Image 1: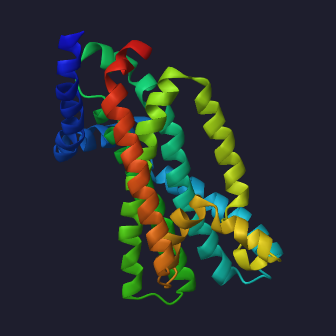
Image 2: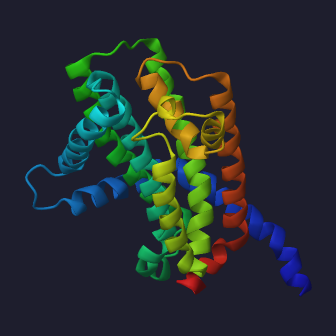
Image 3: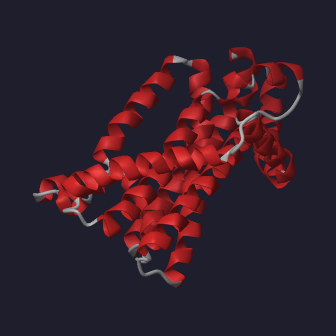
Length: 273
C-alpha cells in the first residue's frame, strides 16, 4: 500500500506528460488520420470529396426549403448562414459521437501495442479536422455565388475553430473514458445531440423567435456560442467580446476536466475494453 501511494504522483506526472509529448509528435497521428480518411473512401473516384458533396446536397435541398419558409425567400443571406452552421455543427457533433467510441474502436491496437491512449484521441480529432477542411470548400463555393461582404474579420474564424477544438479535446477525453466504462452513455450523448440540433440556431435564426424567454434559452445553450464564434467571422461580422469569453471559458473548463479524467483513469482503459 505504501509503495502504491508513493508511486501515484509519478503515475499522474507521466500521464500528464503523455498529453503534451504525443501532441508534439503530431506527424504520427496526423499521418494515421489521413490514412483513415483515404481508407474510408477507397475504390471511389472522388474520394474524400464525397464528404463535401453530401453536405452540399443537404445544404441546397434543406436550405432552399427552410430558407423560403423561415428566411422570407432571402436565400443569399440564409444559405451561407445555414451552411456554415451545418459545417460547424457537423464538426462538433461528429467529434463528440466518434470520441465516445475512440478507445473501443482501437481495442486491438491498445491491447497489442504499448502506445499512449491519447494517441487515438488525437488521431480521431485530426480526422475530423480533415473532414472540416473538405466541408469548408462549400463556404468558398457559396461565397462565389452570393459574395457577401467579408474582410480581415473573417480571419477570426481561425481562433474560433481553435477554441472549439480545445473544448472538444477536453470533452472527448472525458467522454471516451466514461463511455468505455459505461457503454450506455454513448446513446445518451447521441440523443442529447439530436435534441440540441433543433434547439440551436442552425436551421432557424434567433431573429425568428418571439419573446425574451426564448432568447434567454438560446443564451444558455453552449453550442450556440461554439457555432457563432466561427459563423459570424465567416459572414463578415466580428463576434462580441462576451462570445469570446464564454467560448474561451468553456474550452478551459472542458480541457481541465478532460485532463483530470485522463490522468486519473487512462491506465484502466485497457481493462475496460
